[in-house]
Image 1 (cartoon, rainbow, N blue to C red):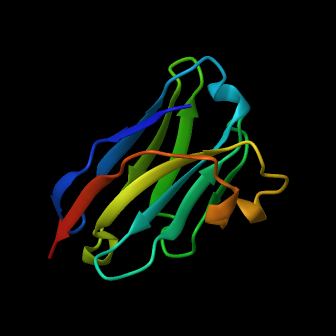
Image 2: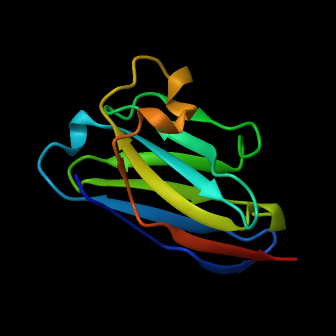
Image 3: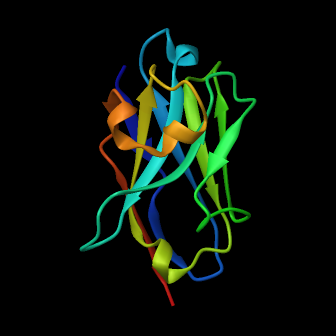
Length: 126
């Protein structure tokens, strides 16, 4: 599957953005999906994940209550709605797909993801 992330941009602190990740192929609903981010000078970190059905979600503590992950399997797209953005949310955001997740807990680990998008830059100004 090929993934294309979009929706990044420049936003003021307290603002909102919605990222999209469009997937190619006819098996999108077989994949659990995740969002990760990498801030300048830092390692990439887990942000959020959603199961293939969309029924279960999982968030990093740093974004819980502010970000919402969702998916539309009919459109082969996963979304990340980001509200109450903070300067520390500034990063390149990546979407990823996996067939290997057995529990929600493991979806925060990068090695289980088989496919990655190219990333979209989110900049939050103070």
